[in-house]
Length: 65
View: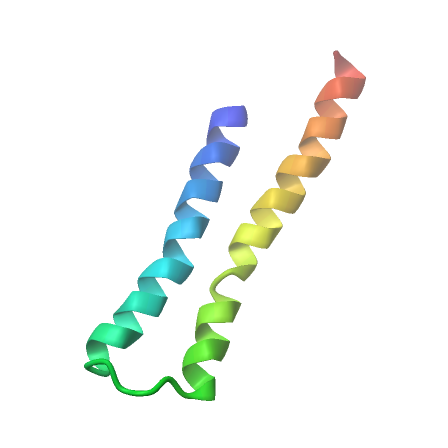
């Protein structure tokens, strides 16, 4: 279970970074707009949820052990 959460966290870190650099490449280095920042920020939401679930599951594992 611990490996699964580490995989989900690693994949959810890659998403915002890929979107951020993808916008830079697609816009050929032009100025970012508010939409670019919003989509990049929203793509970090899965990372926050993965960390929250991992934190909650760590507490459950300690109680069972």
